[in-house]
Image 1 (tube, rainbow over the protein chains, first blue to last red):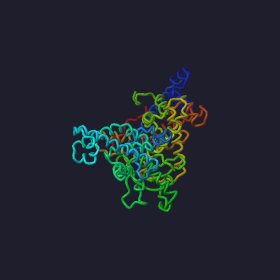
Image 2: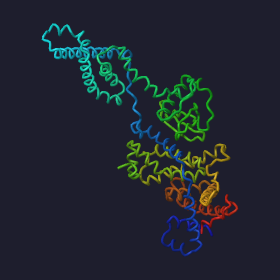
Image 3: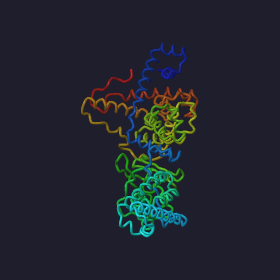
Image 4: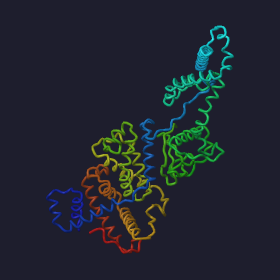
Length: 309
Length: 204
């Protein structure tokens, strides 16, 4: 078999021959034997060990991380859990907002008083204007059922009027959230506009859910005495990246020496949930790309996310 | 229409508009072939995993540059080839850290029944192909893999390797012949890692 036969057989397999050349090839048994060998080789080359699911998912996650960087968070395929509205404490709000809140509270109390009074008038069926005007302070205590009914209907009204602003909170977390909170405060406490009570009413929304977002320091052991938490999502990795970038910039001594890693200049070691299994990873910050990447011990990027350097 | 029912071209258009589901579908559709190309060029599953991941990232990064002159698959396999060649170059520059057990393929399953004999033959076949490919010069290997695994045509391979089409044809022909010769030498019964009777020759 010479080089010309090889060339002819190879071109025959690829369908790259003219009609004349093909006839010549088919007339030569040696060339056709070579053709059969090359065809069999093709089959064997295509018989590749299939990739593992873990490798596939890891590669796709890394690529989609880049996609989200390029096209923004709006393009995220998986819905990001909506964080609760960022409720700002009454005393931490700007003065103007405090005044607005107080004014709104006064108006609500006034309206409530008017409603209670008119309700008492009709309930008592009393013709005396003097009694009616003197009564409001004491009457609610004497008529708890009526007040409860009125408060309940008021709460229902406020709750109904709050529906739209509450829906808007997820999309407009900043000023809109504050404004909605102002309008919604009476609904929480009924007839109270006291700042302390308002703050108390805010606690459930602010406290545990803020903790649920997880302080990124808790993923590492620099400033955290407890067992470091496992990073479970790109959002958490992004938060971890931003935290590490901040520590690297402001308190580099906390990071100590760079962990051994062949995958790049790792900033820290953490644990990431991969296929439901905690996996120790090296965290590498790519400041140029604005990307934080978690590499496993084989230098496979198991999770990536954008972060603000 | 769900993303899975859409053509590559439709998915590319949607992905360019920021449709993450379309991008995900497109990448999933081509990942296995991309991985196969990487596997054949890079040589080990571990390197193929890395190269395939990098290829996926490059596909996303360069999606806006895909001009539609070739099919998306062809374009993606070209990227996979380039990425694998880069991986090979990187591997040559760095010291070999994984001398033993570098590949999952190194551990064939225990021969417990007839079916496992077949599995072992499959693994052995892949191993001998890997070994034969490893002995090919890079430029021959890339040309053969791009043609026989990536299904790229001569002109596309020529562009990718930066050589004339005639050179591509001769590299493919020469590479195939060398592979057949290597495999012929390796298919001798004593070299197979099993005590089962040797299979009939896979080439006529």
